[in-house]
Image 1 (cartoon, rainbow, N blue to C red):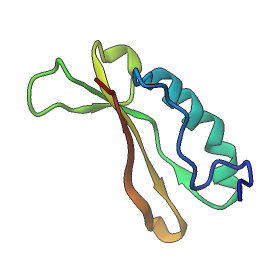
Image 2: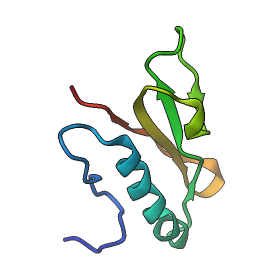
Image 3: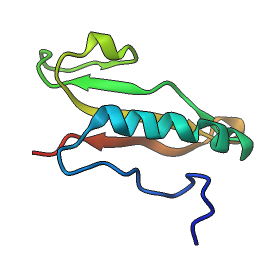
Length: 91
């Protein structure tokens, strides 16, 4: 059953892997997560063209060739609900 709150739902991302759209969908869900007592950390980006090991950046403008976007979600007492929810670029 879809409650419309973004909990446990896949983010709608087209086959080209539009990570900016995925990030916008994540942002839309922040208030619903907060209403459930969850804390969503900053959105993180990984730059495929950066030298290994690639750092996770929180400033999208610092990433020229994004290949993933992610977020860390925690619950009460800093319990992690997921290590990191990540969307990868397809193709």
